[in-house]
Length: 72
Image 1: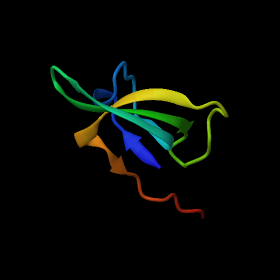
Image 2 (image 1 turned 135 degrees about the vertical axis):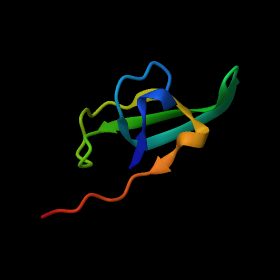
Image 3 (image 1 turned 120 degrees about the vertical axis):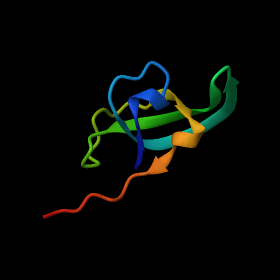
C-alpha cells in the first residue's frame, strides 16, 4: 500500500491510500517530478474502496510505502 498526502497528487483532497496496478510515465511539471499511476483506492486499514482502478498523478519524492495494517 502506498500513502500519498493531498499536496502530493494532482487535484488532491485528503490522503490517498493506493495499491498500484500500473506504473505509467514520469512527468516533469513546473513544480516537480510526477509519476502517472493506475491504482485501486484503499481505506487506511488497507481494505479496497472501489473495484475499478483509478488514475493518479503522484509527486515522485513523496512516494512512501505505508506500514502493513495490524489486525487485533
